[in-house]
Image (cartoon, rainbow, N blue to C red; front, side):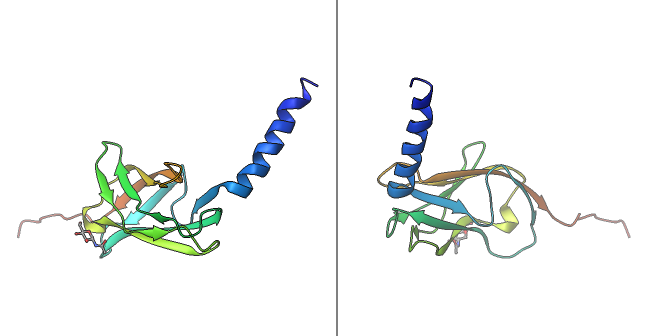
Length: 133
Ligand SMILES: *[C@@H]1O[C@H](CO)[C@@H](O)[C@H](O)[C@H]1NC(C)=O
C-alpha cells in the first residue's frame, strides 16, 4: 500500500495536469539546445510557441533575457487557440545579438509562469578585417 501510493499519486497528478494546465512548447528554440544564428540577418529575433490545454485567450508578454539579467521585451501573444503557432518578436535585432546563454520567459497572469526556455546562441558574423593597401 505504501509502495503503491506514489505511483497512484503520479497518475492522478498527470491526469489533473492535462485537464487544468496550460502547456506551452517551443517550436524553434527548445530548452537546453544550442543554436547557430546568422548575425547578418535583418530584423529582430523572434520565436514561436504552441499552446495546449487550459490556456485559451490568455495574453502573454514574453521576455528574452541573457544570463547577466539584461531583459528584452517581446511582442504580446495569446495562448491559444490550442494547436496554433504564436510568434513573438523581441526588442533586440540580429545585428545586436550576442553569443551566450539566453532564456525566454513566458509569464502567465494566473500561474506566474507558463514556461521558460533556456538555450545557447552562437552568433556568426563574417570577420571584418582591415587590410593595408
Ligand atoms: C526591434 O528592436 C528594437 C530595439 O532594438 C525596437 O525598438 C523595435 O520596436 C523592435 N521591433 C519589433 C518589430 O519588435
